[in-house]
Amino acid sequence: MSKDDRAGPVVLFDGVCNLCNRSVRFIIDRDPGGVFRFAPLQSEAGEKLLEQYGLPTENYGTFILIEGGRYYVRSEAALRVAKLLGGGWGLAYAFMAVPAPLRDRVYDYVARNRYKWFGRTDECMAPGPGIEERFLE
Image 1: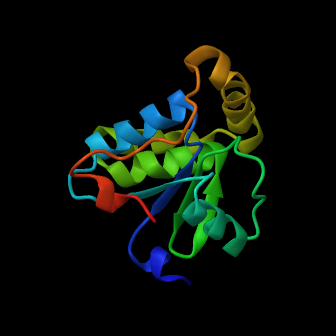
Image 2: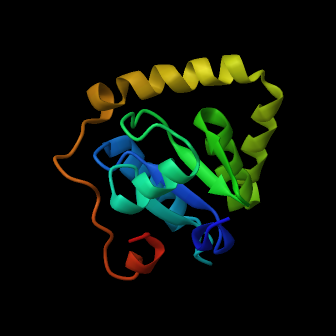
């Protein structure tokens, strides 16, 4: 287990995807205790974590949660994040009862169309003041 795993859950995201960046913002806004940390998949820290867990380093089509020395992808990652956010967001975890192939089919459809529907940026999200310490270097 790396030092990064012991410090709390890490969200790896497509740093040039507007939907992904909004999702990170959503998590940050609902995580005032600063439990979650983040790294764009395209960053050095993101690539190191992908390599550490034996995940592909050239495909940025999924959202990844690293928690407790394990990784979760696609719908399971998103639902685990909702659960960890707690409050009403934790209720979304009930969707884990839906079979993973069905959940992931919906996830994959959105992931395939995210640039078309939400756009993309030319460079990875730069964390603003007050949250930069939550992004891995």
